Image (tube, rainbow, N blue to C red; front, side, top):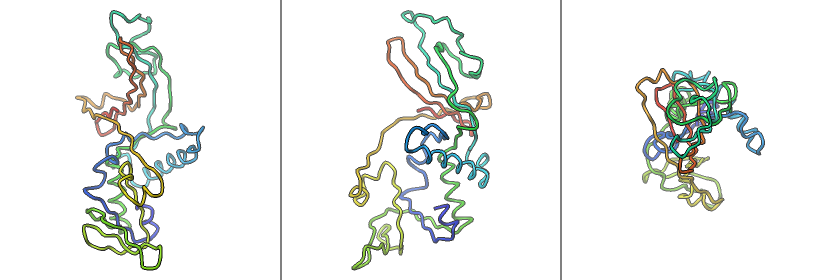
Length: 245
């Protein structure tokens, strides 16, 4: 919507409740440039990473939606306990591990996954809302809050003619359906290709002293004393939150 309206098209955004109220606003917001280089998504990931930097310059992303480059670490940890052999390593791990990563768990190994030139982050709720508000304020896009009832096609043609929002018809000649994990609920999208969501859980912490937490994203492999393995990801945000999934 932002780029289409910037190019001069008349754009109407339809949201059922509010902008970024669901998955779009509750994601991790982690950005990586080269992590998909070995897959067909490699060029897309690099283009996306580059575009995020350009948008941050254009929309003052550091102030408006928490964009910032950051270092990214991988850490392999084990929970201490009577049945866990002490590997005799420093509790904090190597020197590049920041001071705020502490606690009783023993660092078995740590390595750098990304630097400020290859990894970054945004606050997804603020990012999405900034794009929408900028599209409206700068380029004249329109936002409608309501439920999409139907996409209407002109008689004797396959061309879209309108959409119906809460019983009211709105003229349209192009419709983009962007429903994320709820795409399977739409008959049109489901008829084209099977789409399914992936369920995940996340929590947001608000530490007492957020300024003490440096900009480091953490990808952890944590093993309990019973041998259970978990892979949490930790993203401190410049807004003072710490996102964990």
